[in-house]
Length: 148
Length: 132
Image (tube, rainbow over all chains, first blue to last red; front, top):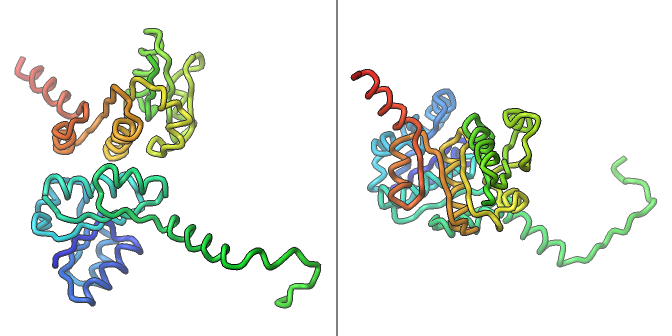
């Protein structure tokens, strides 16, 4: 199973690290050469320096044989275009994108991304579920904060 | 015609001014307030401060009533995403997007976007001029 991860920030780094530990073949693409150097020292030779949206560069990553492309940069537009290029130009069967603006989850799906995930949306849902469990327990009190 | 322009770049601002002079109703969206200075002090159109790939910002700019849309920021991916939102989510009848990278331009033109690449037109023009 070959996974290409685009974006070597915290999400991309930990994702790649755990995928490697679980035995997947991984390539991590990072734009910034200095960041890539740090990533390489941690993860080894799986890191490639380049732009995840440049066709000529992507062709050198073996993308046409990737089973999954995961785009996790901090910019929604870059993640969307990376997934669309992977799908349409390299026939990658499954694309996954990190989404920063929760409204973009629906947009990404409409525009052909297989899985779009917003951490904000996940947290919102969890939070609402937790809060629904116990209705507002703490009315404002005049009791002193015990931590103080 | 009601037109939305995303990106008050040099090209964006000039297109906005030309359209307004033609009598169109123009709204310009940009993430930097200072970019609106390019429109000059007497610009009669609307200016909306915000991210052009945020559907709430685009709604505020009146995209639901727009007949024309052009994404002209300096980022190819931002332009492509904005254009796709305009076309596929809001069904704006006429959508134009600027893409500097000729390869990406080719990909999205094949996919049906109306694209323009200043890189390619520049190359053609310079080539023609040098040949004399």
